[in-house]
Image (cartoon, rainbow, N blue to C red):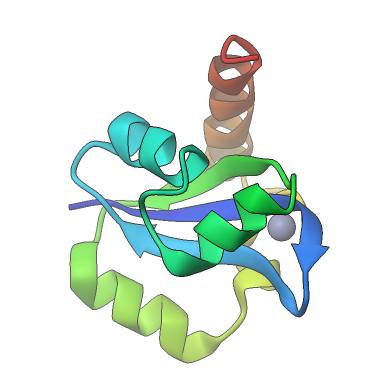
Length: 103
Ligand SMILES: [Zn+2]
């Protein structure tokens, strides 16, 4: 089950990212945007903040626990911290193209 990182278009209090796991990322993202996925993203959406899927990992719950333990969402985020990693750049530009079509 892939892990994913959501980047908020504006900070909500001290939160600017949400890290989670989902089998179907597109469906999960739709749930987040509808306010049905997590308490944090629900209040974020209600505040008028946009959610962007900026990064995914293949590792599932173990990976999610490791990533959360690091508490470095901003550093993991290619929007907040662009990295020279070609793979990450390709993934984020693919996602950006995909998201552009969602309006
Ligand atoms: Zn970010």
